[in-house]
Image (cartoon, helix red, strand yellow):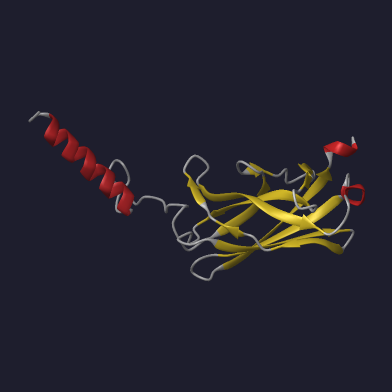
Length: 171
C-alpha cells in the first residue's frame, strides 16, 4: 500500500494542474480554456433532437420531424450547443420559426445545459419550437429558425439554421 500512495498523490497533483489551467499535461504550457466553463469567446449553434443533441447540416436543410403533441399542438425538437457560457442555472432560449418570411413558430423554453466533453460543448435538447399551423401547412416546408440564448451571467447570443419540417404521418 505504501508504494501506491505516492503514485496516487502524483496522479492527483497532475490532474489538479491541468484542471486549474496552469500547465498542460507535460507541464510546459498553458491549457486551452474549457469550453464548458465561461470564457472570452462564447459561441452557440442550433441543432435538433429529442434525446440528444444532433447537428444540423449547414449546407442543406435537415429533415426535422414534426411532433403531434399530447395537448393538440405541433412542434419540432430543437437543440443548442454552446461553448464558454455560464451554465450554472437554466437558460432562457427564445426560438422562432419563419416560413417564407412570416413567423409561424415561437416559444421560450428553459434549457438545462450539460457538458459533453466528447463534443467539447455545453448541450441541451428537446427544446420545443411550437408551430401555429396545421401539419399539412408545415409538412415539407423550409423554415428559418432563430435561437437566442441568455446565459446565467447575462450574456446573449443568437444562432440561425434552416430546417425542413417533416411529418411522417403525411408520407
